Length: 149
Image (cartoon, rainbow, N blue to C red; front, side, top):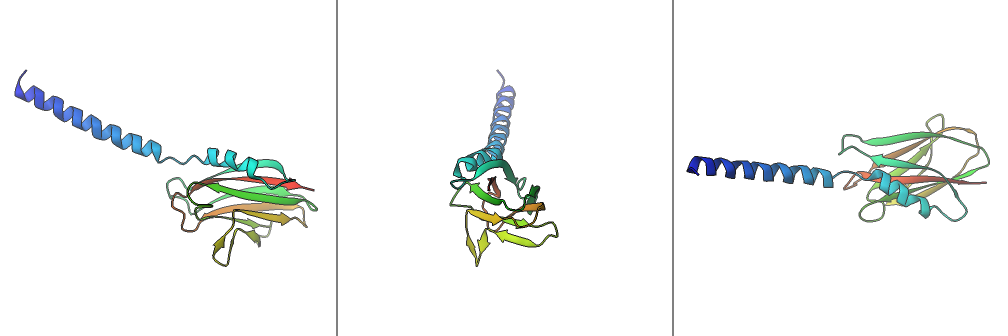
């Protein structure tokens, strides 16, 4: 083998190594929002029935918030929890807004984060469940919505 051929093989090998390393690090950095959402289901407070899980994914920081809507029923109490990697909520905040976009509950109070909110619904209608990232390192998580009457 010529020296030129050996050099080309080395360059191809090194290039392949860097591409493989880049791709694998990108795959490992993916958000497993569905996994976090599923992990939240058994963490609903006692007496609450599971309704729906939510994925919280900022898509690598491209989104400042993730929002969903759900119709709440008067006389029903709702419970929304948060699950994330790292410590406790990892800076994830859930805020609940009524149909007129008035905030009715939030998981960040006086600078402190709580991992769940409970809301006794007093008016049937559409409610907006908004997730934001306040100092979150991963901007990734999941949530579960439960109810009890």
